[in-house]
Length: 237
Image (cartoon, rainbow, N blue to C red; front, top):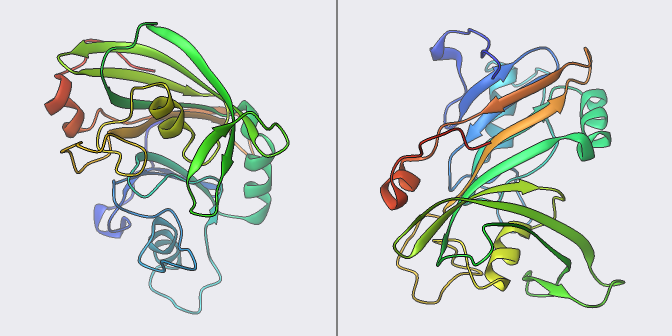
């Protein structure tokens, strides 16, 4: 795990946790409930606007800005990577297939196979719901690798190795397998009583866009997860 750049806490961005920063990239831990970026339907405060304010240091005339490399759903917490230049963004997105991403999630029930890969073609309908389809022309091939880390009464804690990065991929694949993510109001159980989505981006490994080094960042297991399934005995990713 990389050591975060030591900057005085009072200068850190408000509303996200700064994990690392250099001249080319910023890595943060995003809380659940915060959008990565604004949409036409929702222009509320986002991780993107928070970091733009941060790199401008309060100067509205500053030309400094951050560039979105990838996204997390609003209710998904965890690691987000931003670039600080168009060149860095282009490099990171161009090398995204070699970027290693792990998530933690808690699902309902007990999976028969304790490790496996869920694969399907994912498409999106006019209501913005993602689903698997047999029509290869309509969907994009998607792969979600999982390992069961722990089982408790009614729940399973999974490590997800995201092999492709489609919209809502993890949530849809797990829901369609009969084990929806806890707290998923869109694809989950109708009677799910939890208000927090149990999906957390816990680690990322990527190639630095300038020096070419492989960097790895991890985050702690969210407290909500610990409440549901107890503490983990070992490293998850």
